Image (cartoon, rainbow, N blue to C red; front, side, top):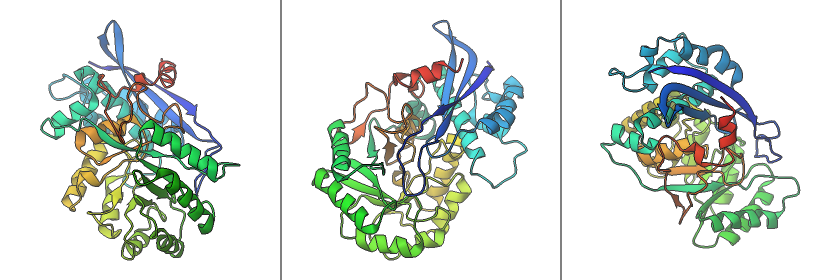
Length: 387
């Protein structure tokens, strides 16, 4: 059993949308395929991976360091002790050989892309959906057969008025979502309040609203928004300040009853550990959003979950960023609270299988072996172009 090839492509997901910090006019992702010598129906099995939105493609790191390390490794070094499958943890050690600690912002994304592809390949070899494989390995066979998902949208867009925002949110409700998220911090507080009130008016009593500042605020601004947002029954107040400003988070958590959510821009277990050590977050109320695809992959995310448990945090307080099927399987297999979703943006990578509906804010993972990316008709051509 061996890897016979690794391919990588850069795919644009550019858009005129923006949040409080960046626009997406030049956004790209890296897509990779890891091809094996294992054949099914006469074709070699291939594992696929890509990085989440918000971080650009990682071609240089992939081509110069991480792909060559996998291809140059002795084939047996990438396998489980019994040689019956590839071992993502061993592959992770090989990819990270000769890398100094710290500096997680970009290489963590490159490693995460390859890690996703390896797990897709491993599950395909086992002929199991990834979430069932994870449940068997890490939860004594338990899995969640359906997962909470929320629709992330509400971006700032040229010419987008309150009516257009409401029309967008109505499409999410029609799709079956019961929780939606909109952006704040890219306009004045007064304008953002009008946007929030317009959103709540369309959602009604049976749906929930989360807001996301994308790390924009100083402590003073974050507190001013928190005081204004207390008037609304919000699902959470996300990324109020810089993701590494733990003092800001601790100060904010000490004065607001709003649930806080953060972590999508932390890319290692040690950074997540510093957040829960020094960020003042409340394990019974707040949410953690670390994204496996951006933070060295599932191998590192498993370490993060162990660390969180040691600090009194339940996996049920984790809702990964990214809106991809990899995180959906991880949520179902490892018992997380749920997963993000991008029904309208970052296509063809956002969203889930075409034939898997959202019902009452929950979704079932695909039942096909692997992650199931091939079940998105608009994503499949991007995968097939790799080889």
